[in-house]
Structure formats: C-alpha cells, structure tokens
Length: 123
Image 1: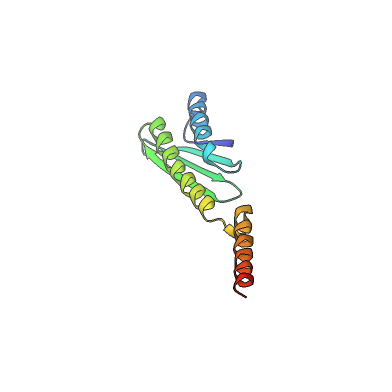
Image 2: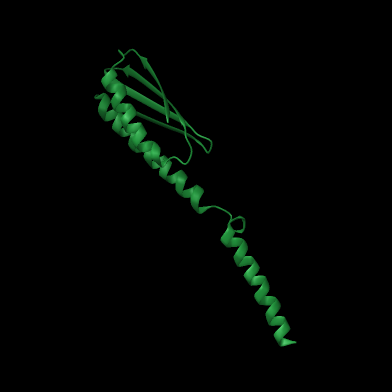
C-alpha cells in the first residue's frame, strides 16, 4: 500500500511515520487489491487527530481517531480500518454470483442432464 503523510500544526516525526507505516502495512494484507492511503495528522486542542483514507478499486475507506497520545490514535485508526476491510472482504467473497463460477456452471449442466435422462427413462 502506498502512503502519503501530511502533518498540520505538528512537526514531522520519522518514528511516528515508521510506526504508522508498519501498522498500516500489517492491516493492508486484508485488502484484495493494492490501495493508496492518505494519512493526515494534526493537533487540535492538545489532542492528536489522525485521519486515514484508503482508495482501492473496490471501495473508499476512511477512519478517524482523536487521542492525547499519537500512538494510541494510530492504533485506534488501524483497528477501525481493519474492521472495514474485513467486512468488505467478507461481502465481496460471499456475494459472488454462483452461475459465473466454474462449479456453478457444472451444477447447472448436471441438473439439466439429470432432468433429460429422467424424461427418457420415463418414456
């Protein structure tokens, strides 16, 4: 997953960037296709606001967390994204049309041949 970091009212930190990259790469394995993530870090009212948006072919994912510690905010955002990824992956894998798969076409052919044979035997 490609990452783009943006910091507002906050100094750029290599350690924080590395931690975010590791965590997002770990959760990126749930994606079916490669994605592009925009990571927006800001500081509002003595709290860290972290917003991550991920664009993929299937869907657009967005998660936001506000916490006093930036590392806890990263963990919260990663947990939210992981839930979204898993839900979307489950929907995409379970809602496929069976008639388009190889097994579905074979089942349709088997049903058709069985009905034709039954008619021939009965007549």
